[in-house]
Image (cartoon, rainbow, N blue to C red):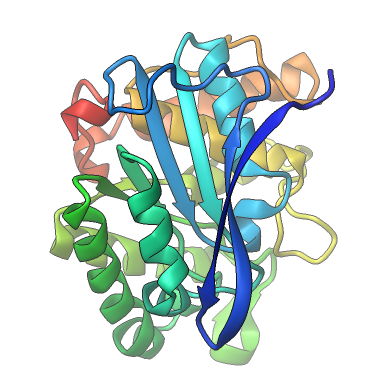
Length: 276
């Protein structure tokens, strides 16, 4: 099926130089919001990230998955490759995007390596995260931290010898700032580790050992579905281009990771944008 997408262009100066940033209102299979106002019948989510969000178009995969569960969703994104939270916090385009729509949730995703090194968290991630959380709450939206996955081989150059070591450090970084800011988390990295242990044949990394395959993006979308709506994605009909068996296993891992530990992720027991 061809993708039909409505575009609202927002042109602004990016951090470090001029650039054009666009707010994509994904329409695809999900019909999106019926009114311009905030409504309990539709969820608006803005993703602030980088290529971990843009590769395979996570916002659209999430929107299509949500529609297969009966949820209207409208998404927007700002995700230039390599961007850090400091880039987002310092960009005028971020403020423009935040003011463009009555967002319910704003996803906050740091660059892939910064959360794994304590000194980098303290110097770069945490100050930027605090600023972004303040900006997000100022427009009556709620922040949702996107816990990312580690590199397949870790980051040996920084003493993180192996995937599990790097993942544990990334987890600690996100858990700490979310607790400080009393913000919720989408525990994608936690689900990633579980699935790697259960079904390593479902390849989650591309050949670069960093960016997600279609399966990795689908796993992230399933985690977001469970976190945002407080519902299980198991047996949802939208399965991207995955086999039924692979999609089902991914759905099951995402559901268990999120729904079995809602308090750990600071998610409402009955999650919905209005409940955050």
